[in-house]
Length: 458
Image 1 (cartoon, helix red, strand yellow):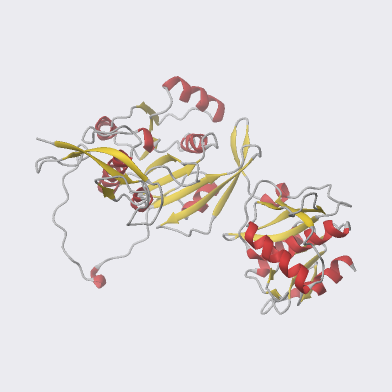
Image 2 (cartoon, rainbow, N blue to C red):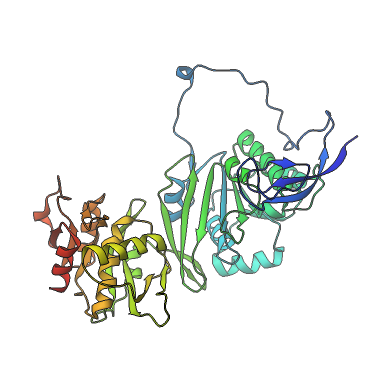
């Protein structure tokens, strides 16, 4: 007979304790222990096994040279941005987790994608919406798919029964926090329920070869809700992010066992759904910034995609005793470091100035090559002098004021030339092996921030 007891489980690492602890001794996080009612299984009790699948036999060690490494069989998702982030398509038998804030468009992205898969049988399991709600959304997004099956169910055992009867080519679960198994006596969304359900779904995906897409919520800290072990179980973790007040959405790969984690996809939210943005540079650049101070164009790269972004800065006199420092879409600590370099190495006093920085379009960029554009925008706003419209720049700024070389400078130059820019500032000696004579854009190489400022402001 199963025995029940109350334990406290860390939502970050999954460690349990008989009493509540302020700090987890396993992972070191604070205030992560939550109360759970756990049922201790008898030896006869087992984790739910997908219907029709046999128990896996005893594993035995195999020599590495005897293992055949074949190319993964992938499914084309009919979405260039999603295929790029996944690494070329969805691998059969893989478990993919898509996380994001409520209302950001996770279900919209998945639903409009599977409606394009006319040659695949898709089972969409929804634990949050009714049949009528999904029908209304599908009519708005795309024409009906003849092979898309909808199931509104939250019981994991019933989901496996229907999956065995239908034999789908792709399984969608929206969302993992609403699914529960009868073998765990706790509410859906709890640490134990999410852990057990995700482990059973992983077993189903690996043994049947059916890829599974899980949709998950995130908490107020921005991480996926539930235990941290959920991100370790799945093969790929995708983060769908963006500001609800902006029309752009970014799909990032946080973890990917079958591809690169440096890729990202960009979408534009519209009334009829999400539209793929194949050339983000044209959408991220404002065309009417001529004559405005505090605006600099940076040639950035996210993953393998080069695009030009607009960096905006505002410098004003501090009203209060302590100057304000604010950055949107950029690391505030790196901005403070760049302001210190500007004051120490270039001689511009900003200690009594408020500095506000914004990356246009609601993007968050981690490329260090936009350092030079950040300093140029700050100085342009401080001097109230605009930068010429045809100029862009790329370069990492060091603590001594030098401009350090950046990677993939050829792609940055070609992207700026394609968009009609006439001049680009790059670090000195960053053109090794690149024939600059075939470029129509003027390439200016600078060593220090002072040289860059003379080139921009005279």
